[in-house]
Length: 133
Image 1 (cartoon, rainbow, N blue to C red):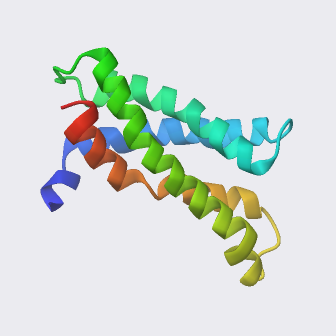
Image 2: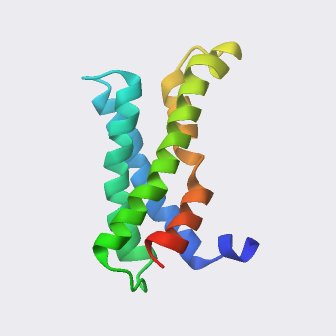
C-alpha cells in the first residue's frame, strides 16, 4: 500500500490536486461574498472538481484507456464521497471544534483548508481504480 503513495503518479496527483484545491479554496472566499458558507463550500468544491478532472486527465493519469464520459462519471462519484468529507470536516471545525479550542480568527478559512485536505488519499485511490483505470 505504501508504494501506491510513494510514486511519481501520486506526486503529480498531489501537485495537480494542490492547484485544484487552491482554486477550490479561493473560489469559496469569492462565492462567500454572495452566498452562505455552506453553499459556498459546495459550489467551490464543484469549481475545484472540474479543474481537478482536467488536470488529472492531462497530467496524472495519461495512460487511462477509459472513455471520457466514463471517466467523468466515476470522477463525479468519487468526488461525491470527497465533497461529503470536505463539507463535514469544514462544518465541524468551523462551528464546533475551533470555537471550542478558543480560535477566533480565520475560523472558516482554517476549517475549509483542513476540509479540502482530508480526502486526498481516498480520492487518489478512487480515481486510480475507477475514474482513470
